[in-house]
Amino acid sequence: MATGTVNDRVLRPFVNEIQGEVNPRLLRLGLPMTQRAIDLFQATTAPACFLHVLDLAARLSTQDRGGNWHLPENPAPTRAA
Image (cartoon, rainbow, N blue to C red; front, top):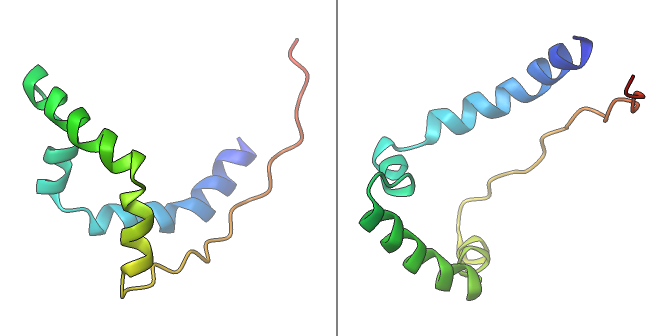
């Protein structure tokens, strides 16, 4: 349980910030419900991934997203009984 509290304390501000910025309309676009919408989503995202559109968008972005979140250390592995 200690790992859960550390993760909650460290990651919760990050999660809250990201969830506060998400546009519900964008969520509906990224989570299609019908087969036709899923096919269209896959047909548009596959070339975008292949062409590294997100990397290009990040490079051309005028707003710096920071990225200075400090993640907790991984706990020591435990043996399965």
